[in-house]
Amino acid sequence: MKTYSPKPGDIAEKWYVADATGQIVGRFAAKVAAVLRGKNFPQFAPHWNMGAHVVVINAEKAVFTGKKMEDKYYRYHTGWPHGLKEKQAKTLAVEKPGEILRQAILGMLPKTRLGERMKKRLRVFAGPNHPHGAQNPEPLVIETRKPRKE
Image 1 (cartoon, rainbow, N blue to C red):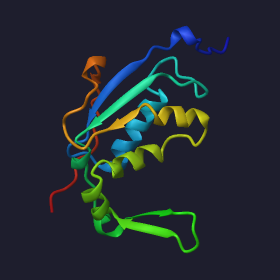
Image 2: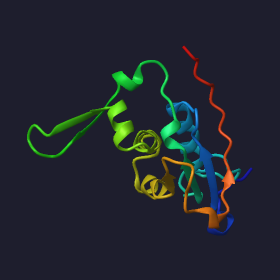
Image 3: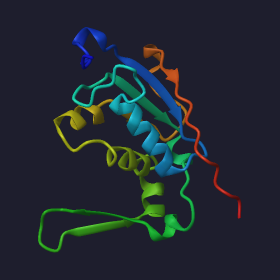
Image 4: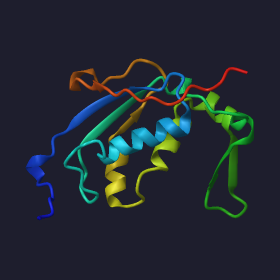
């Protein structure tokens, strides 16, 4: 038995468009991150960039379950003393509608040079319009469980 390793000619660029309307943020982000890594390709190899581009539309319509919109905080440090900044999820959703979904997806990619190249292949748009129609992206159907109406 021989181990298969893909060659550069075996990998073709592929574009997908995923609609985040009504999707749960974490579950949706996990599926998109797996596609960006190339795990949906039969010739997947963890040390290769598989050439998948993902365009996420309607990112502002992704939802959290429970009380995460009030309880979740996004923190970063400016690098200066006492420079820890934080924003509540609902504040961030108003100021930058696609940033919550972008951070969730990027947090699930590898923190390596290969992961940096994968990050460049993600495009997140708050609304339904995107400028990548010329690449003929395939619709990426992602099924997450629907949140309960309370």
